[in-house]
Amino acid sequence: MNNILDNVNHPNDIKRLEKSQMAGLCADIRGFLLENVSKTGGHLASNLGVVELTVALHRVFDPTKDRILFDVGHQSYVHKILTGRKDGFKTLRKFGGMSGFPKPNESDCDPFIAGHASDAISLALGMARARTLTKADYCVIAVIGDGALTGGLAYEGLNSAGQSGEPMIVILNDNGMSITRNVGGISTTLARQRTKPGYYNFKKVYRKVMKKIPGGDKLYAFNHKIKTAIKKAVINCSFFEEMGFHYLGPVDGHDVNRLTDMLEHAKTLNEPVLMHVVTKKGKGYTPAEQNPDAYHGVAPFDLKKGVEDSQKKSFSIVFGEKLCELAENDERICAITAAMKSGTGLSGFAERFPKRFFDEGIAEGHSASMAAGMAKQGLIPVFAVYSTFLQRSYDMLLHDIAILRQHVVLAVDRAGIVGADGETHQGVFDVSYLRSVPDMRIYSPASFAELRDMLEAAVHCTGPVAVRYPRGAEGNYTDGGSDMSKLVREGNDVTLVCYGTIVNQVLSAAELLSARGISAGVLKLGVIKPIDYDAIITSVRKTGRIAVIEESMQTGAVGEAVLAKLAQDNITAEALLINLGDGFVPHGSVDKLLEACGLGAKGIADKLSAWLQIDQRMSNDEERKT
Image (tube, one colour):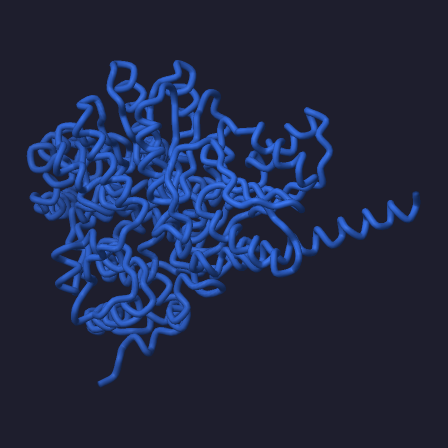
């Protein structure tokens, strides 16, 4: 049996296929996704849900010229399949392989990188305005999910795009989900629209009739207010039209030929258009349809068995368990998440304390401000959020939390290198931006036991406080405590300062150095703001050398602060900073990325060995001169 997908190997090959082949092509694509993503892992349910929509987009538009922007971007797998990247799925999300998100340096068909939600409309408007100013000829389309409409940035884009008059199409992919089920008023509004698809048919008939009547165009304009009133009576879609969009839909997002016709029509309107498409997340794979949040991001799994629940302990699970324990004894403790209930380990809290659990959707800035308001009125809000998403709340951290020293607890999940999601998701900036917030106290646990102890300390302290911890399991270091610092290994030749789970690599590196005749002491910081400078200075006075090793960008990191303090206090010591430098960390497994960035045990040991040998040679040269 011929696989229709075999005939689609380059951008626009799809346009050579017959209309009658589209349903078969969609089935082939779903089979391809299931076969490949089950082997590599990746974002599955969202891509199964946009198969027909993406096929229709590529039938109508030219991805080599037209700009198709996927909000967030994790649902771009079908787009990649249709633009000549089928072979790349063997290396999906692996180091040096194909990204799981749009990447312009991967293909000209990817107009922009994407990783965070709610910005596609703003990006699309920028591209549309550039087209007008440069008198270029291309279409601009933004594909945004209803989950992203819980983020305020989407409304800033909608407000400006609708009033701009710029020809562009916003496709609202409405599946009632972000990662978990959507919350809030916009979700309810869209749910109402999904139940009344008759409006679009009425509108088509109305316009057709008006065109047949002599002077119908003028009559159509004259009756606009009457039409609007009728429309409101049929379906409550005036929200988008009042913002300036020509509204189309709702339309079945799994009827590929109907979608193609609608897109062809939208393309001719030459104005801002919002096309409302209703899809089912996980479409075509029953387990994913029944439990789409479990199939949002998956590790490799058996297609016949489906994704199995993992009971393996992780920092997120330990955080959730400890928070429940603390909340049992203190009714002031509340938990906040931004559409990441299960990802941040708060599912158990939500079940046990539903009145004290708040899922605010993809709205990190709002969540931070709300937490400040709760704290001001005497509650203890704990905002659990991924490091990469907390970046979106920086102004609120300064303005709403720090100025009045509100006791908001930030549970910063996925701190450090995260892995396969790549540049947009690595949690490598929070050390720099959190340390810049006045009066912020920052705990950095290296083990499950430390996370428990430090979370308890954070809940019971005052002022703004963050507890940052990585994704996944702990390493060989399992001690507890909430100490500001702890000397975990004695040494005479060099002081190695570190924090968080990188201590595992640093301790292993110290063992390697010992075999090379170098005695390295390891000082682990439990709190990275304020820093225990006294402990550092005591150790440095003994060894005369210091290396600060951290899974963070260099600018604004702990190492820079430590060296500045030593210089300020006129303490002479040979110094080395080992970190992620100034750049972005690509995608790949955490172990592979640590190795590639020189933060694996061997990489750390090799850097230190080379540095200490140079240092020793310089000392010998000085001795000869004297």
